[in-house]
Amino acid sequence: MKVPFALPECGEAETNEVVEVIKSGWLTTASRAFEFENRFKEFTGAKYCLAVNSCTAALHLGLEALGIKRGDKVIVPVHTFTATAEVLRYLDADPVFVDCDKDTFCISIPELQQKIAEDNLKRQIKAVIPVHFGGHSCDMDHVIDISRKAALSVIEDAAHAFPAFYVSSNENGEEKRRIIGKIGDVTCFSFYANKTITTAEGGMLATDNEAIARRAKVMRLHGIDRDVWDRFGSLKSDWIYDVVAPGFKYNMPDLSAALGIHQLRKANLFREKREKIAQRYYDELSGIDGLTLPKIKCSMKDHAWHIFAILIDSRYSKHSLNRDDFILKMKEKNIGTSVHYIPLHRLTYYRNRYNLQPEMFPNSEWIFQRCVSLPIYSAMTEDQIEYVICSIQKILN
Ligand SMILES: *Cc1c(COP(=O)(O)O)cnc(C)c1O
Image (tube, rainbow, N blue to C red; front, side, top):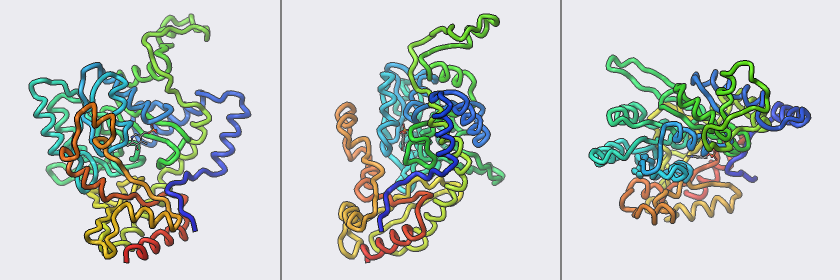
Protein backbone atom coordinates (compact mmCIF):
# COMPACT_ATOMS: atom_id res chain seq x y z
CA MET A 1 0.00 0.00 0.00
CA LYS A 2 1.21 3.48 -0.89
CA VAL A 3 -0.48 6.74 0.10
CA PRO A 4 0.87 9.92 -1.47
CA PHE A 5 0.45 13.11 0.57
CA ALA A 6 -1.71 14.75 -2.10
CA LEU A 7 -3.25 13.75 -5.42
CA PRO A 8 -5.56 15.70 -7.73
CA GLU A 9 -8.81 14.11 -8.89
CA CYS A 10 -9.33 14.72 -12.59
CA GLY A 11 -11.79 12.69 -14.63
CA GLU A 12 -12.82 12.19 -18.21
CA ALA A 13 -14.61 15.53 -18.37
CA GLU A 14 -11.35 17.37 -17.62
CA THR A 15 -9.40 15.23 -20.09
CA ASN A 16 -11.93 15.78 -22.89
CA GLU A 17 -12.12 19.53 -22.29
CA VAL A 18 -8.33 19.88 -22.34
CA VAL A 19 -8.13 17.88 -25.58
CA GLU A 20 -10.80 20.12 -27.10
CA VAL A 21 -8.84 23.21 -26.18
CA ILE A 22 -5.73 21.76 -27.80
CA LYS A 23 -7.65 20.85 -30.95
CA SER A 24 -9.25 24.30 -31.12
CA GLY A 25 -5.86 25.85 -31.79
CA TRP A 26 -6.34 28.55 -29.15
CA LEU A 27 -4.55 27.52 -25.96
CA THR A 28 -4.39 30.70 -23.93
CA THR A 29 -6.99 33.01 -22.39
CA ALA A 30 -10.37 33.04 -24.15
CA SER A 31 -13.85 31.58 -23.72
CA ARG A 32 -12.95 28.90 -21.15
CA ALA A 33 -11.28 31.38 -18.84
CA PHE A 34 -14.36 33.65 -19.08
CA GLU A 35 -16.64 30.70 -18.45
CA PHE A 36 -14.60 29.64 -15.42
CA GLU A 37 -14.82 33.20 -14.05
CA ASN A 38 -18.58 33.32 -14.55
CA ARG A 39 -19.12 29.99 -12.86
CA PHE A 40 -16.89 31.01 -9.98
CA LYS A 41 -18.97 34.16 -9.63
CA GLU A 42 -22.13 32.05 -9.41
CA PHE A 43 -20.54 29.73 -6.89
CA THR A 44 -19.27 32.42 -4.52
CA GLY A 45 -21.66 35.25 -5.24
CA ALA A 46 -18.70 37.61 -5.60
CA LYS A 47 -19.47 40.45 -8.04
CA TYR A 48 -16.11 40.26 -9.82
CA CYS A 49 -13.90 37.22 -10.30
CA LEU A 50 -10.64 37.40 -12.20
CA ALA A 51 -8.92 34.17 -13.21
CA VAL A 52 -5.14 34.39 -12.94
CA ASN A 53 -2.22 31.98 -13.17
CA SER A 54 -1.65 31.65 -9.39
CA CYS A 55 -2.90 32.70 -6.00
CA THR A 56 0.40 34.54 -5.61
CA ALA A 57 -0.53 36.60 -8.70
CA ALA A 58 -3.99 37.29 -7.24
CA LEU A 59 -2.43 38.53 -3.99
CA HIS A 60 0.00 40.74 -5.90
CA LEU A 61 -2.74 42.21 -8.09
CA GLY A 62 -5.09 42.68 -5.13
CA LEU A 63 -2.50 44.52 -3.06
CA GLU A 64 -1.52 46.69 -6.02
CA ALA A 65 -5.15 47.54 -6.72
CA LEU A 66 -5.65 48.41 -3.04
CA GLY A 67 -2.88 50.96 -3.46
CA ILE A 68 -0.18 49.23 -1.40
CA LYS A 69 3.09 50.88 -2.33
CA ARG A 70 6.69 51.49 -1.35
CA GLY A 71 7.14 51.94 2.40
CA ASP A 72 3.71 50.65 3.35
CA LYS A 73 3.33 47.88 5.89
CA VAL A 74 0.86 45.03 5.82
CA ILE A 75 0.07 42.57 8.60
CA VAL A 76 0.78 38.93 7.79
CA PRO A 77 0.54 35.88 10.06
CA VAL A 78 3.90 34.20 10.52
CA HIS A 79 2.33 30.74 10.22
CA THR A 80 1.86 30.64 6.46
CA PHE A 81 3.49 29.96 3.12
CA THR A 82 6.08 32.45 1.87
CA ALA A 83 3.75 33.64 -0.94
CA THR A 84 1.56 35.49 1.58
CA ALA A 85 4.48 37.74 2.54
CA GLU A 86 6.68 37.80 -0.57
CA VAL A 87 4.07 39.66 -2.62
CA LEU A 88 4.57 42.70 -0.39
CA ARG A 89 8.21 42.82 -1.39
CA TYR A 90 7.17 42.85 -5.08
CA LEU A 91 5.60 46.24 -4.26
CA ASP A 92 8.51 47.38 -2.09
CA ALA A 93 6.19 47.23 0.92
CA ASP A 94 6.97 45.23 4.06
CA PRO A 95 5.18 42.58 6.08
CA VAL A 96 4.55 43.08 9.79
CA PHE A 97 4.42 39.61 11.33
CA VAL A 98 1.99 38.43 13.97
CA ASP A 99 1.64 35.13 15.80
CA CYS A 100 -1.16 32.63 15.21
CA ASP A 101 -3.89 31.15 17.37
CA LYS A 102 -2.72 27.96 19.09
CA ASP A 103 -5.92 26.04 18.22
CA THR A 104 -6.81 27.08 14.67
CA PHE A 105 -3.33 28.18 13.44
CA CYS A 106 -5.14 31.27 12.03
CA ILE A 107 -4.10 34.84 12.77
CA SER A 108 -4.15 35.70 16.50
CA ILE A 109 -6.76 38.39 17.12
CA PRO A 110 -5.06 39.83 20.28
CA GLU A 111 -1.72 40.00 18.41
CA LEU A 112 -3.39 41.70 15.45
CA GLN A 113 -4.95 44.24 17.77
CA GLN A 114 -1.66 44.91 19.50
CA LYS A 115 0.32 45.41 16.27
CA ILE A 116 -2.21 47.93 15.01
CA ALA A 117 -2.13 49.78 18.35
CA GLU A 118 1.68 49.96 18.17
CA ASP A 119 1.39 51.50 14.71
CA ASN A 120 -1.04 54.14 15.96
CA LEU A 121 1.21 57.19 15.54
CA LYS A 122 3.18 56.16 12.47
CA ARG A 123 0.19 54.96 10.47
CA GLN A 124 2.31 52.82 8.17
CA ILE A 125 0.12 49.72 8.32
CA LYS A 126 -2.33 49.77 5.42
CA ALA A 127 -3.81 46.29 5.24
CA VAL A 128 -4.14 42.84 6.79
CA ILE A 129 -3.80 39.47 5.04
CA PRO A 130 -5.65 36.83 7.08
CA VAL A 131 -4.89 33.25 5.98
CA HIS A 132 -7.70 30.72 6.41
CA PHE A 133 -5.35 28.03 7.59
CA GLY A 134 -6.11 24.55 6.31
CA GLY A 135 -9.57 25.71 5.24
CA HIS A 136 -10.68 26.94 8.68
CA SER A 137 -11.98 30.48 8.39
CA CYS A 138 -10.22 33.14 10.46
CA ASP A 139 -12.30 35.00 13.04
CA MET A 140 -13.46 37.41 10.34
CA ASP A 141 -15.85 39.51 12.45
CA HIS A 142 -12.91 40.54 14.59
CA VAL A 143 -10.49 40.88 11.68
CA ILE A 144 -12.92 43.14 9.80
CA ASP A 145 -13.95 45.11 12.87
CA ILE A 146 -10.38 45.80 14.00
CA SER A 147 -9.32 46.65 10.43
CA ARG A 148 -12.21 49.01 9.72
CA LYS A 149 -11.54 50.94 12.94
CA ALA A 150 -7.95 51.48 11.83
CA ALA A 151 -8.93 52.13 8.18
CA LEU A 152 -7.05 49.06 6.94
CA SER A 153 -7.96 46.99 3.89
CA VAL A 154 -8.53 43.25 4.27
CA ILE A 155 -7.17 40.94 1.58
CA GLU A 156 -7.71 37.28 2.34
CA ASP A 157 -5.31 34.50 1.45
CA ALA A 158 -7.92 31.83 0.79
CA ALA A 159 -5.50 29.40 -0.89
CA HIS A 160 -6.79 26.65 1.45
CA ALA A 161 -10.36 27.80 1.74
CA PHE A 162 -12.35 26.73 -1.27
CA PRO A 163 -15.06 26.20 -0.45
CA ALA A 164 -15.18 27.33 3.18
CA PHE A 165 -17.66 29.29 5.25
CA TYR A 166 -17.62 31.76 8.08
CA VAL A 167 -20.54 31.76 10.48
CA SER A 168 -21.15 34.74 12.73
CA SER A 169 -24.03 35.54 15.00
CA ASN A 170 -25.49 38.95 15.78
CA GLU A 171 -26.77 40.33 19.12
CA ASN A 172 -30.07 38.48 18.66
CA GLY A 173 -28.21 35.20 18.27
CA GLU A 174 -29.16 34.92 14.61
CA GLU A 175 -26.57 33.07 12.57
CA LYS A 176 -25.18 34.35 9.33
CA ARG A 177 -23.24 31.92 7.12
CA ARG A 178 -21.05 33.50 4.48
CA ILE A 179 -18.82 31.83 1.92
CA ILE A 180 -15.16 32.82 1.91
CA GLY A 181 -14.91 35.20 -1.06
CA LYS A 182 -17.70 37.54 0.07
CA ILE A 183 -16.17 38.96 3.26
CA GLY A 184 -12.98 41.01 2.89
CA ASP A 185 -12.13 43.65 0.27
CA VAL A 186 -10.34 41.08 -1.86
CA THR A 187 -10.13 37.28 -1.61
CA CYS A 188 -7.45 35.21 -3.34
CA PHE A 189 -7.86 31.51 -4.14
CA SER A 190 -5.33 28.95 -5.37
CA PHE A 191 -5.81 26.15 -7.88
CA TYR A 192 -2.29 24.81 -7.58
CA ALA A 193 -2.03 21.05 -8.22
CA ASN A 194 -2.36 20.01 -4.55
CA LYS A 195 -5.15 22.43 -3.59
CA THR A 196 -8.84 21.54 -3.11
CA ILE A 197 -9.66 22.08 -6.80
CA THR A 198 -6.95 22.47 -9.42
CA THR A 199 -6.11 24.00 -12.78
CA ALA A 200 -2.48 22.72 -12.52
CA GLU A 201 -1.38 26.30 -11.81
CA GLY A 202 -3.98 28.99 -11.27
CA GLY A 203 -5.76 31.36 -8.96
CA MET A 204 -8.76 33.63 -8.65
CA LEU A 205 -9.18 37.15 -7.35
CA ALA A 206 -12.68 37.76 -6.00
CA THR A 207 -14.03 41.15 -4.98
CA ASP A 208 -17.25 43.14 -4.79
CA ASN A 209 -15.36 46.38 -5.40
CA GLU A 210 -15.63 47.61 -8.97
CA ALA A 211 -12.59 49.92 -8.87
CA ILE A 212 -10.35 47.17 -7.50
CA ALA A 213 -11.64 44.72 -10.12
CA ARG A 214 -11.04 47.20 -12.92
CA ARG A 215 -7.48 47.96 -11.84
CA ALA A 216 -6.62 44.30 -11.26
CA LYS A 217 -8.03 43.40 -14.66
CA VAL A 218 -5.83 45.93 -16.41
CA MET A 219 -2.72 44.96 -14.43
CA ARG A 220 -3.37 41.25 -15.02
CA LEU A 221 -2.39 41.68 -18.66
CA HIS A 222 0.47 44.14 -19.19
CA GLY A 223 -1.52 47.20 -18.12
CA ILE A 224 -3.40 47.06 -21.40
CA ASP A 225 -6.65 48.98 -21.20
CA ARG A 226 -8.90 48.03 -24.05
CA ASP A 227 -11.82 49.79 -22.42
CA VAL A 228 -10.07 53.13 -23.07
CA TRP A 229 -10.26 52.43 -26.79
CA ASP A 230 -13.71 50.92 -26.62
CA ARG A 231 -14.92 54.31 -25.43
CA PHE A 232 -14.11 55.67 -28.86
CA GLY A 233 -16.82 53.36 -30.16
CA SER A 234 -16.07 52.89 -33.82
CA LEU A 235 -12.33 52.47 -33.30
CA LYS A 236 -12.43 48.79 -32.47
CA SER A 237 -9.87 47.19 -34.75
CA ASP A 238 -8.38 44.38 -32.76
CA TRP A 239 -4.76 45.48 -33.26
CA ILE A 240 -5.41 48.68 -31.32
CA TYR A 241 -4.64 48.88 -27.63
CA ASP A 242 -3.25 51.29 -25.08
CA VAL A 243 -1.01 50.67 -22.08
CA VAL A 244 -1.78 52.71 -18.97
CA ALA A 245 0.69 51.11 -16.52
CA PRO A 246 3.57 48.63 -16.43
CA GLY A 247 1.33 45.63 -15.76
CA PHE A 248 2.06 41.96 -15.21
CA LYS A 249 1.53 38.72 -17.11
CA TYR A 250 -0.94 36.90 -14.90
CA ASN A 251 -3.76 35.74 -17.20
CA MET A 252 -5.09 32.17 -16.92
CA PRO A 253 -4.78 30.12 -20.12
CA ASP A 254 -7.83 28.23 -21.43
CA LEU A 255 -5.87 25.01 -21.04
CA SER A 256 -5.99 25.57 -17.26
CA ALA A 257 -9.53 26.95 -17.23
CA ALA A 258 -10.67 23.77 -19.03
CA LEU A 259 -9.72 21.89 -15.88
CA GLY A 260 -11.19 24.55 -13.62
CA ILE A 261 -14.66 24.48 -15.16
CA HIS A 262 -15.06 20.78 -14.38
CA GLN A 263 -13.26 20.86 -11.04
CA LEU A 264 -15.61 23.61 -9.89
CA ARG A 265 -18.64 21.42 -10.63
CA LYS A 266 -17.24 18.85 -8.21
CA ALA A 267 -16.04 21.29 -5.55
CA ASN A 268 -18.85 20.51 -3.08
CA LEU A 269 -18.52 16.78 -3.64
CA PHE A 270 -14.73 16.95 -3.13
CA ARG A 271 -15.22 18.95 0.08
CA GLU A 272 -17.71 16.40 1.42
CA LYS A 273 -15.30 13.58 0.69
CA ARG A 274 -12.53 15.39 2.60
CA GLU A 275 -14.90 16.10 5.48
CA LYS A 276 -15.67 12.38 5.70
CA ILE A 277 -11.96 11.57 5.87
CA ALA A 278 -11.52 14.19 8.60
CA GLN A 279 -14.41 12.65 10.51
CA ARG A 280 -12.77 9.21 10.26
CA TYR A 281 -9.53 10.65 11.63
CA TYR A 282 -11.43 12.26 14.54
CA ASP A 283 -13.34 9.05 15.26
CA GLU A 284 -10.44 6.65 15.06
CA LEU A 285 -7.42 8.63 16.18
CA SER A 286 -8.82 10.20 19.34
CA GLY A 287 -7.41 9.22 22.69
CA ILE A 288 -3.95 8.25 21.42
CA ASP A 289 -1.22 9.40 23.83
CA GLY A 290 1.03 12.02 22.28
CA LEU A 291 -1.34 12.82 19.39
CA THR A 292 -3.55 15.91 19.34
CA LEU A 293 -6.24 16.25 16.68
CA PRO A 294 -7.06 19.64 15.12
CA LYS A 295 -9.15 21.87 17.40
CA ILE A 296 -11.72 23.58 15.24
CA LYS A 297 -13.97 26.49 16.14
CA CYS A 298 -16.31 26.03 13.18
CA SER A 299 -18.62 23.17 12.29
CA MET A 300 -17.28 20.31 10.17
CA LYS A 301 -19.31 21.39 7.12
CA ASP A 302 -17.94 24.96 7.13
CA HIS A 303 -14.32 23.77 6.87
CA ALA A 304 -12.67 23.20 3.47
CA TRP A 305 -10.49 20.42 4.97
CA HIS A 306 -7.52 21.15 2.74
CA ILE A 307 -5.08 20.34 5.54
CA PHE A 308 -5.46 17.99 8.48
CA ALA A 309 -2.61 18.92 10.82
CA ILE A 310 -2.14 16.80 13.91
CA LEU A 311 0.34 17.51 16.70
CA ILE A 312 2.84 14.93 17.93
CA ASP A 313 4.21 15.54 21.41
CA SER A 314 7.07 13.19 22.34
CA ARG A 315 6.65 13.79 26.07
CA TYR A 316 3.24 12.17 26.03
CA SER A 317 3.94 9.52 23.43
CA LYS A 318 4.57 6.01 24.79
CA HIS A 319 7.61 5.63 22.55
CA SER A 320 8.89 9.21 23.03
CA LEU A 321 8.38 9.75 19.32
CA ASN A 322 8.73 13.31 18.19
CA ARG A 323 7.28 14.81 15.04
CA ASP A 324 10.36 14.09 12.91
CA ASP A 325 10.45 10.44 14.06
CA PHE A 326 6.75 10.15 13.28
CA ILE A 327 7.27 11.44 9.72
CA LEU A 328 10.04 8.87 9.16
CA LYS A 329 7.89 6.03 10.51
CA MET A 330 5.06 7.10 8.19
CA LYS A 331 7.51 7.21 5.30
CA GLU A 332 8.64 3.65 6.10
CA LYS A 333 4.99 2.69 5.67
CA ASN A 334 4.84 4.54 2.32
CA ILE A 335 2.57 7.28 3.65
CA GLY A 336 3.30 10.82 2.56
CA THR A 337 2.98 13.63 5.11
CA SER A 338 3.93 17.29 5.16
CA VAL A 339 4.58 20.13 7.61
CA HIS A 340 2.48 23.29 7.43
CA TYR A 341 4.47 25.37 7.87
CA ILE A 342 8.05 26.13 8.56
CA PRO A 343 7.01 29.52 9.95
CA LEU A 344 8.32 32.58 8.14
CA HIS A 345 10.44 33.65 11.14
CA ARG A 346 12.54 30.51 10.58
CA LEU A 347 13.32 31.29 6.94
CA THR A 348 16.59 33.07 6.22
CA TYR A 349 15.24 35.95 4.18
CA TYR A 350 12.54 37.03 6.64
CA ARG A 351 14.62 36.23 9.72
CA ASN A 352 17.50 38.40 8.55
CA ARG A 353 15.61 41.27 6.97
CA TYR A 354 13.16 41.69 9.86
CA ASN A 355 15.37 40.47 12.69
CA LEU A 356 12.88 37.81 13.76
CA GLN A 357 13.38 35.42 16.66
CA PRO A 358 11.34 32.34 17.57
CA GLU A 359 10.50 33.82 21.01
CA MET A 360 8.53 36.54 19.23
CA PHE A 361 6.04 33.96 17.92
CA PRO A 362 5.56 31.40 20.71
CA ASN A 363 2.36 29.83 19.35
CA SER A 364 3.63 29.37 15.82
CA GLU A 365 6.92 28.03 17.16
CA TRP A 366 5.14 25.60 19.48
CA ILE A 367 2.97 24.35 16.62
CA PHE A 368 5.88 24.08 14.22
CA GLN A 369 7.79 21.76 16.55
CA ARG A 370 4.84 19.34 16.74
CA CYS A 371 2.71 19.60 13.60
CA VAL A 372 2.43 17.10 10.78
CA SER A 373 -0.22 17.06 8.08
CA LEU A 374 -1.93 13.79 7.13
CA PRO A 375 -3.13 12.90 3.63
CA ILE A 376 -6.66 14.25 3.01
CA TYR A 377 -7.97 14.42 -0.56
CA SER A 378 -11.00 13.31 -2.51
CA ALA A 379 -9.11 10.69 -4.52
CA MET A 380 -8.12 8.77 -1.34
CA THR A 381 -9.56 5.26 -1.41
CA GLU A 382 -11.30 3.56 1.48
CA ASP A 383 -8.34 1.19 1.78
CA GLN A 384 -5.88 4.06 1.88
CA ILE A 385 -7.83 5.86 4.62
CA GLU A 386 -7.96 2.62 6.63
CA TYR A 387 -4.24 2.04 6.07
CA VAL A 388 -3.28 5.54 7.29
CA ILE A 389 -5.39 5.11 10.43
CA CYS A 390 -4.06 1.62 11.24
CA SER A 391 -0.47 2.71 10.60
CA ILE A 392 -0.76 5.65 12.99
CA GLN A 393 -2.35 3.44 15.65
CA LYS A 394 0.54 0.98 15.27
CA ILE A 395 3.22 3.66 15.30
CA LEU A 396 1.92 5.38 18.43
CA ASN A 397 0.58 2.44 20.44
C1 LIG B 1 -0.51 27.47 -2.09
C2 LIG B 1 -0.53 28.71 -1.28
C3 LIG B 1 -0.31 29.97 -1.86
C4 LIG B 1 0.16 30.15 -3.26
O1 LIG B 1 -0.68 29.62 -4.21
P1 LIG B 1 -0.17 29.56 -5.72
O2 LIG B 1 -1.44 29.35 -6.49
O3 LIG B 1 0.77 28.41 -5.82
O4 LIG B 1 0.48 30.85 -6.01
C5 LIG B 1 -0.46 31.09 -1.08
N1 LIG B 1 -0.77 31.00 0.22
C6 LIG B 1 -0.96 29.81 0.83
C7 LIG B 1 -1.33 29.79 2.28
C8 LIG B 1 -0.83 28.63 0.09
O5 LIG B 1 -0.99 27.45 0.70
